[in-house]
Image (cartoon, rainbow, N blue to C red; front, side):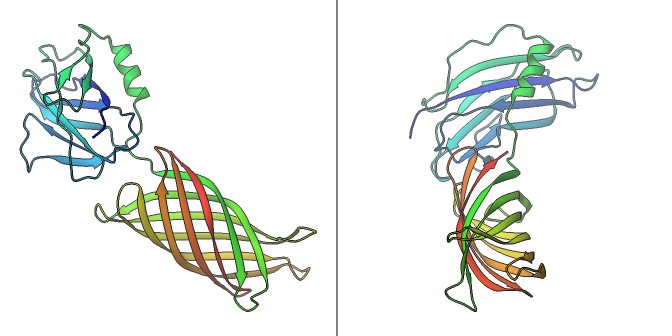
Length: 287
């Protein structure tokens, strides 16, 4: 496995006036795009005690802890979700004063046989610095994406009638997550059709809202079945013709990095104004 450096920031938030019931938040970052999953465990390393999360979930908040004693968070990472690295570990400071906010930062090598703290934590971090670290922490989940799509559409009633489709796509990811493998996404698209011949002629505009039932082979690769409603306005005859119907097809998505996703899509369109099939590719930015 490759070596990488994980920066872990502990932020201790004292929320009550009692020694119990406080919240401890661990944040970490990563710079190896091949990492697909993390797992963590507090104060132990039992084989059945790990909690797994996706590579972009780089924070965990633990509640109702006794902060008068130190706690150790163990973090491991994986490229395939099967083989895991050695543990990185960081011990929290104890808090005797419930009104103070303490932040400690250390750099940990995640792949030594025994995790080694490379940089010593600063003795004190004021509340402003700790708050800044929280603001700069990455989002837990990339729930949305937006991008562009280019497709070739073929009229099913006329094999020679083909148009180019181009437009924008907006997605809401994991709107409903059934398990680690299955989830439902929503995809909204606004597409315009053009005849790919000279002179280039505008044909129609399509608006669709599709639910995508997805299965993930890994955090980078998955397939899905888009199914939903579509509306289209056709300008081909010189008079506006409005149609409504549905679309169904198949989708394959591939995560190309931390933020960029490629999507290959094929769709059947069954509307009152047309029956067609389109296939193409889109690139989206995840945020």
